[in-house]
Image (cartoon, rainbow, N blue to C red; front, side, top):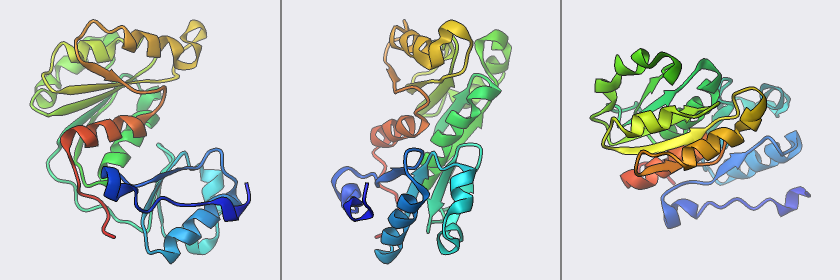
Length: 223
């Protein structure tokens, strides 16, 4: 793709309340630099997802200096420092440590919009007591994002315990017939807990956007 074909959607937030996010894992370093150059020229902040440490290191110095990069989630904020997070409105749960990268992508997306998140890790169903120790913190919140791989049982369990919106993020964690998250996706889709929403495999960003739409949030970087 020639750089002249890069067209950033700076009007998206006026239409839907969410800024354009830049998915980096399929882009060359040159294309990412070109995107950031155009954002800088327009004085617009950006959320970048799937930005690897290797890509980050290869970017132009002037762009790298304006990036707040989180290596766990591979997300970055360009020319943007989120406001201090308020009291948590959303709980983000991960079944195991292997699911943390996906959960962190959701947390970082929420933080970009100034939405506070209660992040709770390693509460999968293999040790259900760990979830039950924290459930009273989770229950009052209006939304919960649950990242889980393998059999993806955790979203169903949470969906039977809390009254708020539950968004399941099946992850690609697991051996053999876990099939890189396809089994988790199917398990989440057939959840017997009513009203559990499901996003695509490893899509923490998408789960956060579901919650932002549901909450009707319009707090975001200024024009």
